[in-house]
Length: 299
Image (cartoon, rainbow, N blue to C red; front, top):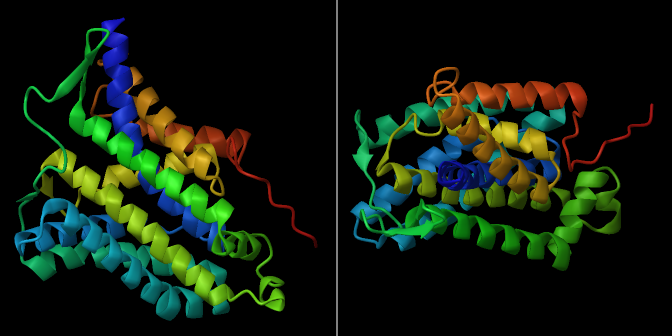
């Protein structure tokens, strides 16, 4: 039982990171119907910004908040001046643009800060050897509990935004019927720009959590995590916030269980294969995901 609980707690902790990145994917997809392949790299560059702000003298948490605000503003500009003009000409070109952003941002971090090795990132939560809670014989480290708390607070705020505000109503209207939304006075362009900004801010939190757990920032830190986050969003459904959280947590637990109980077959090195299998199975059985809504198009 102790072994099971340890794998479970480790999986919940890893899944919280997946869920944060998956939330960013869902926010953009709900608003525009696009999948942002650069979401992981935007989170990575935000983690570098947080590290840089902290190096300038800001406290770690203030640095993370400022980096999230910076990411919000930059992502709004990206949507307005890159994604929107391209999307008007060809929806498929948005995918190419997102891949271009992925490659460009990945090259930007080491170029901008002239670094070739990982740089130390100050932990955001207690990280001493004794900073853990023991439950049923298993150890759940306080920094992992902190990441789960960040996820819970983020989800609660997003739920209030989408379900209890006029902007949330406008966002749902643009997502369900982008052609008719402007006819009732909704500024679709503004909604889309803010959607990208929100996704980038949430991604910035995810990037900071990854850097905090790793203890450093690196240009390749989000590769495998973004792939797993994509699998989580696919599993839960690209238009469901709850689905993103559920998918992230379930995938994290499943990965750790499989790697823990089958170390010779899977192990830590092949955990990413689990994400690939999840994507393939979900796309074959239920492409809309467990909690996603199926779109019906009239022809």
